[in-house]
Length: 368
Image (cartoon, rainbow, N blue to C red; front, top):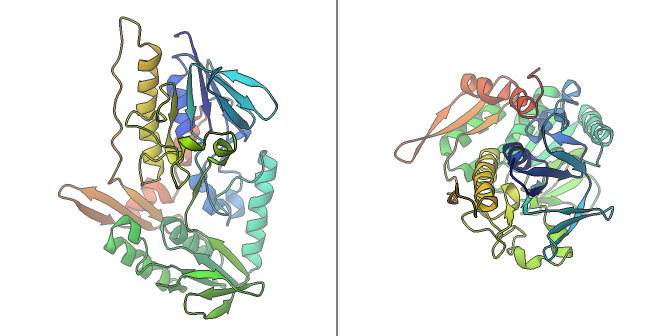
C-alpha cells in the first residue's frame, strides 16, 4: 500500500466504485451522510411495492478491507491545509480528494434522512399513498417517468394513472424513436393515459394541476420525474463557487480533475464531464479517476504512470423496465444506429432484479 490519504466524499455508485478500486493504494476514507449504500436503481419499485422496501439498502461495512467509512456531512474543503471539514468539526487530511456527491433525485427515488429507518419510513409512506390514490399523475416522459408509471399501473390496476410529458415523444432524449413508440404502446395497452406536448405545473388549488394551455385537472398524488440537481450547494456555500458551472456542476478537465486543482477530482453526476448522467458513465469515470489518482500519488516514483483521459459516453445501452417482466432496451450498434430489444432482454438484463445482486456483490455481500 502506498503512503497517502485519499478522501472520497459521496458513497453513491461512482464513490463506492472508486473507493473500492483505491482501497489497496492508500488510506481511503469514504464520507457519506447516509449510514448505508442506497441502490437508487431499485428505488422506484421500492416506492410502490412493500416487498421491495428494504431492497435498495446495502450496508457499507464490507466495502473496504483497509480503509474506513465515515458517516457525516462534508461542509468545507480546506485546500490550503488539504483537509475536508465535517459538520461535526472533524477534519480529514487528504493527499487526493474525490468529490462524488452525485445529484438530488425527485421522489420516490430519494434517500430521505440519514438513517435506514428514516428512509424506510418515507418509502412506506409512498406505498400507502399510492395504494390509496384514485388518480396518480407522473410528470416527465424520460426513462424514470416511464418506469414509474409502469410500476404504479401494475401495482394499482384499478387506479387512474396519467403520464404527462412536455416533449413530443416518450424517451425522446435517448434519441430512439422506436423505443419511445414501444413505451407508448405498452402504457396505452395498460390503460395509462399519456399526454404528450403537455407541460405541467401545480394548479392554484391543492390537488390540481395545469398544463401549458391552462387546462386544469385533479389528481390525488403526483410524482415529478423531470430531472436532477447536482449536490454542490455545499461547495458554493463553502466559498468554492468558482469550481462550478452555470448549472451547478463541477468543472473538470479530461483527467477528471477540478480545474486548477491537481489533487482534487470529481466523478459521476456531480461533474460536467458528460451530459449522459447514467450509472455506466459514473462507473467509467470512477475507473479513470482511480488510475489517475494512482498516477498522481506515484508521480515521483520509478513506476510513474501517465494519466488517462476520459471520453464522454455518447452512446451506451439504456434499459427501461416496464415492471419486473417487460421493458425496452436501446442497444447502440455500429453505424450510429440503435437496436431496440424487447421484454426478454430487458427482463434478464435489468427489469427482474434491477441489478440488485450485482450491487450487493460490489459491496461484499451475497447476491441474494
